[in-house]
Length: 206
Image (tube, rainbow, N blue to C red; front, side):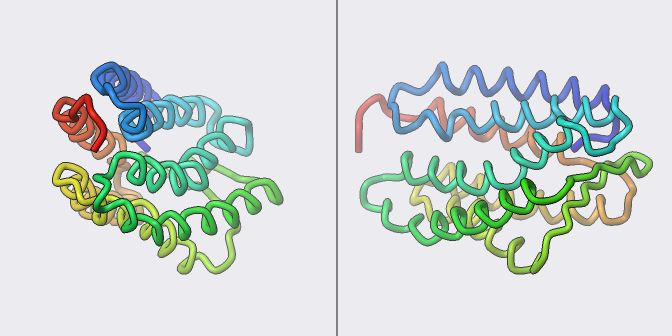
């Protein structure tokens, strides 16, 4: 999330560009899901630019935003970690992956079952999904995404997980205060970290 449609558009285009560079750098098929994470983050920002332009509401852009942010990333990130992790560490992301699949299933059902509404709140956008057991779902989401990165067995991905944990906390605090949304800046930094990881990946299986 960014603080305006223009900011989302610019950030989304830049982050997606980093994603293209990441995908172009990797040589192993198993590295492609992680390399494509910036592409997802960039698409997410571009979709939210449409949410801003529409003044929020319950249109298709709002639904697509929710699908990417919640069920898709909850599964994509642990799967990407599982594919990219060293062989000696590939059992570690199993629990985060299970958490991600269960959490994504519940979230996907909620999105399909009831309207998702976006509300423009100053320099932020609030999304109302009407989820039940929110605390449990948030915990499952964090275990799936941040937890899988921390258990990856890869130094760069571990650093990515630490950055994600700190950045998510800061972004959440600022968003709760309805001061300004800084997710786009955080996503940009994460994308640069993924690019650094992609540059150092070997061309052989481990």
